[in-house]
Length: 211
Ligand code: PRP
Image 1 (cartoon, rainbow, N blue to C red):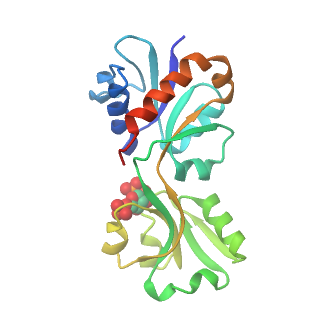
Image 2: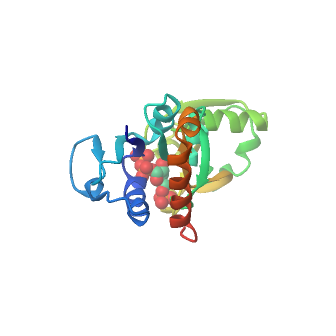
């Protein structure tokens, strides 16, 4: 049975294909245009499944995939029972509270309306601050929240900062720094240790010094 990788469609997938190629895995199939959700490397040693980024930890926790690559932002938000094996350094971004500059003190004021895709992260952050919040779940274009008056602030990832800037918003507080993480199913690591560990070492080496 092949080792199964769960890969997030989108931002991280291409980068992962590049790294695996450096590790000697011929995964040219991953970069060719296709709508298939299950692919194999050329040698048929690895199976790749393409899932929504937020679902990667679920597939790994449930053991239907052995290894996955996912942003720390998603890992924190989903809070699944998996091993985080390595920080791959790429896909760097910051989880932040953002809003209009005049909201600078809003983080400590009471009953704040917070729009976010990361509802658990947002809830936990404000809980530790002792701030009452009304969390509004959005699935994208979160920056619209303050602009259109849906929310006072947002909790979202900031990469280049261009989306905030284009919408007149600023970072009010950084919650944590995120980057791509290699995660592994707990049982797989025990039962397939001799296959998984060397691969993880190779992946770590391939990503060293690359941000
Ligand atoms: C993410 C995030 C911000 C943006 C930040 O959205 O939610 O909106 O990227 O990037 P920047 O700091 O480089 O501008 P994404 O592109 O994933 O789309 P979404 O709005 O559909 O979530």
